[in-house]
Image 1 (tube, one colour):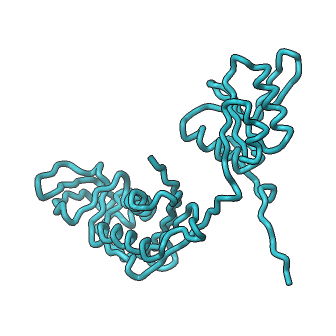
Image 2 (tube, helix red, strand yellow; image 1 turned 90 degrees about the vertical axis):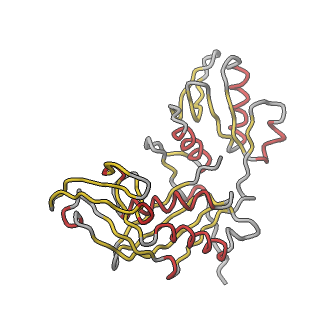
Image 3 (cartoon, helix red, strand yellow; image 1 turned 135 degrees about the vertical axis):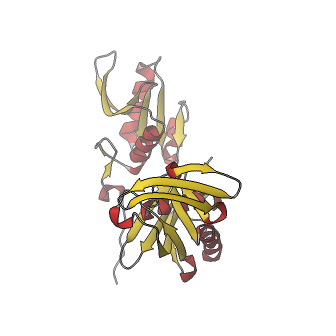
Length: 273
């Protein structure tokens, strides 16, 4: 009988958006958070202490240093940094197993790893199909009014509870509610809106096939922030799904098939308040 396999951090390559090769998933998470907050950082920064010793710190920012505690050597390094750099802000992030050794120090953030299990599910159902019309003035072939029937598959990623991410029935209900909002709608970029009244939008634009000047009912028109491409429709579905998802869902992926064997896939993290 096979003994099974284990997945370790060492099996993966973690690379931040600057191209730095990081040591662990924790370091990658820190890099992503700093990037999201628009905080400039240097990874693997060498600092010279007052006693002349050079130490490599994981992250340097304008506000201070961030050190990831992965082993016993990191604990010793962190304590030395705290003793030498009295007037500098330093924060450490480590696993709870190091809590006892770091209890006397301040600025410790403890995180769990093995106790948290991340999982994903995908849901595809005939009821997720929707019909729509659109115009893409920037694409000659699609610059006339035409329609599609598209099918949707949704992927959900997050922290599992009792080996369950979300009940399939609950997820299906949410997805169907969102798809119904888009069904039998005319999609158009909001930038082509010329004017509107209580019941209608008036849109106008020049395209490869000539000038379009349309008045369309508001209740069957869906304005988009951008062109009505299948990629943008995937993003729009994610925007509608995200607020309806339980807190343990961390990312949503949407596949939209436009015809046979073609379509778009967008995967987006969910930002929780």
